[in-house]
Amino acid sequence: NFYVDDEVLNIIKPNIISSLKSKEDDPWEVGKKAFWKVLYGDHPYGRDVQGDESIISLTKEDVMRFFNDFYKPDNSFLIIVGGFDLDKVEDFIKKEFSKWSGKSKKVSLPEVKELNPTNQVIVKKDLKQATIRIGHLSTNIKDKNSYALKVLNFIIAGGGFGSRLMDKIREKEGLAYGVFSNFFIDRLMDGYFFVGTQTENKNVDKVISIITNELRDIVQNGVSEKELEDAKNFAKGSLPLSMESFSSLSSYLLTEKLYGLERNYFIKSIKEISVIKIDDLKRVAREYINLDKLSFVVVKGE
Image (tube, rainbow, N blue to C red):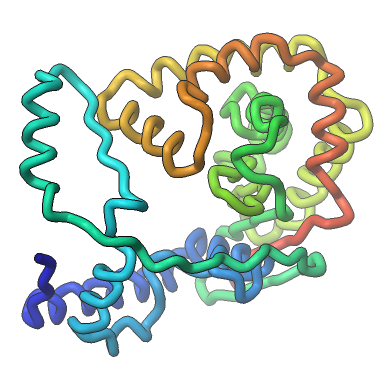
């Protein structure tokens, strides 16, 4: 039986509030929160998973009610990875979980509505560095083009020093220490595409111009064969390495179950990535990067 003690709750809530307040002093966190709001508005995807200051009013009855509504066997997964005796593990699970029963409360998640592109500048005192986030809504993890998007992302700014924007902004212009991008689509509904970096306040306009121009070039002209092969080799090589620990492997397995993906989805992605052609990247770039829909969030000093 699940039970929440008042004493424990009174320790946890202030800790969460303290964490939320510390984020207010972190320009990257401020920019991320504002960016989510720009893309998703009042949709749950636009909220911080830690919540907000209203959690201070939560009671132990609220927490227990939530647990009893949603923590049920019909929406739970148990992932076990490593060397073990299957018969013993099955016996243990049956013994420990045999009395766990009931159906979870069903809640429908609202559809994501596309909002108008927004330019938002957040001024914070005493910041010498500006934090920039540029992007728009994208697709979800079940999209058949998700493999091609992984490869395309490596070329844009997801491949560290092997990516275009890192080469342009850091290596050639010296305007930022790092630049990265991502098609954040590991969810059931619309994810998002974004490019993020930090630069001196005086360089904001120049950096934004480089990012948008490079995205425009990729959309209009595609990528080179060398970029394609480098990206494919990186993607195929990094996946096995990311599965070396039991913890990471269990995370991959859990993702497959949570999102209803086919078995061995991530292992099969190596084969799918191997057959991607340059025309595939040109097509997905035009389909999944829309310069007219880009939103811009900048957190900078006065």
